[in-house]
Length: 493
Image 1 (spheres, rainbow, N blue to C red):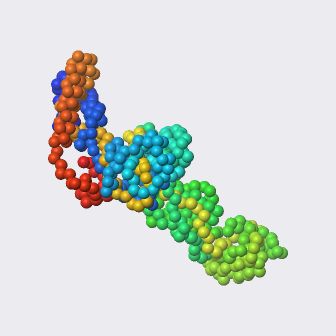
Image 2: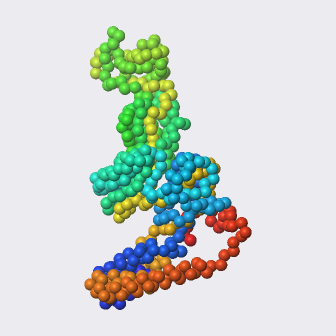
Image 3: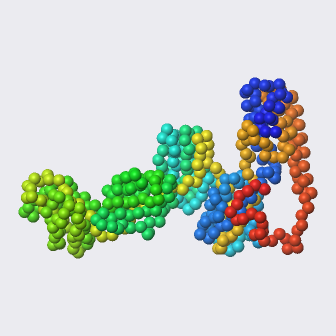
């Protein structure tokens, strides 16, 4: 029987056939199912995760965070609680948090093969101190307040922050652990996560006269860019989108292709008019470095150019490029002579000057890594159970984690997730419906019936488990590496 069938049956038993009666019956059934789910370790509520944790901090199971420096593992949100952990070769005992204070003070810093684990308080996210972001998909959600409960980089101080959502990235805070992230109902989804730095060590500006730098990216992902001094005034090309950067001003974009292009990184700002210098009408550029070479991209309005270091070049035609050296040390000026003997000091500049030497990228580029995506009706981010291995593994370790899942939220035509739970579930829900009509005596009898049926159901499941025949080898169960499930799986039992 599905949820609708059960609700209709209860309504018929109680003589309540209005539309709101059926809705109330479905609500009572869901609430009672959650209560029953939480009373026992039902077989259908158990889940197993198999994973490999590596010394470099990676984990083979998705939605799992392994922090080697603290020997802490964040399990996928499917785990509502942790029951047991084992390795390939041996089981692992549960160690109480208090036991650390009663044993060797160096216990948690020991390295080797872990034999025990501790169950820590759950959290939304934990890592080394990171910058957190929240991104709202719909502009109409701008200004709606979300709430963050954080533990700072010291791992000690807790705080609660209220953050206004934006349809671009917003900066809530930096923290080591996020204990909760909540929001009101929204029109669009909300992504919550952190910034991961993009490695730019292999990227540099190259080409003449307008060097460009290319940064590989992943299309569709969100990136945050903080320009440095070499990116001031350059153009960021993101597919068909162009953005002029300013040093220190953060730009957040959604990647349109496989790479970002930083173009014109070394255009020397020269003003827009000519001035009188060195006895003639010349174009004057300030603060040119002696220690660099410069590319002159000729326009039609200049005859020649020279530097104070004695370098000279004649305009070889609009669009052509010549390189002038400013000489060693300090700063100086670069000069251009106007074509046709013009005397107008407001003549337009037609040539451009670029730094010809290869420049390093001084910008910082970050990839936005979502930790959780909250749908419009969601009000809180999923919680991850945390465990700490009491000895830090130095090699890759295969773990199996047994846990219990949260009670599923049933749809109108979903069947019950616990075998044979319908009789006690209907008795409880019928009592709730009678109590709703203030029929207290009948409601109490129905509740007693539900409690009796639940006890029978629990005994039945325990009896079936106790009656299972098992073949135990002489040396115990030992290595489970040959079991049917691999090291990258998450599945119910």
